[in-house]
Image (cartoon, rainbow, N blue to C red; front, top):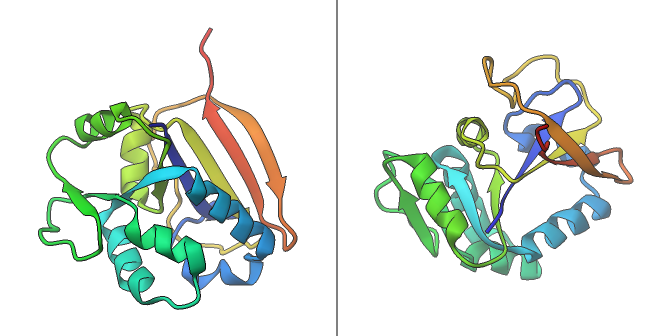
Length: 182
């Protein structure tokens, strides 16, 4: 499996609960993008906070069609030292050495392993060079303050731009892969 991280960020790089600011820009183009992404995935990888938000919302959300069915039934792996009894269907808690656990997941046959949200986990996996694709959905809004996706002190990493998509309400999705050295 390859690990694909898709993150919502504001134009000024703020990364926080996108439910507070992304809605006005999410249109049919963005929905099709996310549906296509989910269709090519076999599992999700989440940090505990993101998992808890998803687990609270998705099982009771109405009108989500095939997208919601897949979100609720696909395997989910949650990195946590505190979550003991996950309630969302098909959830496995990963404890211990995260890098080793994710390397083991990536060795499994299958399609994409999706990482959404989970800023702390994103930065740890980026540091350990375990993310195969970084997708940023850049929203046309300046929030002015808030946490940034890329942690201060993150190691320098070269990325190669492989795709750009523009959606009707101004979201730009950019896709990067690790740059080849040399």
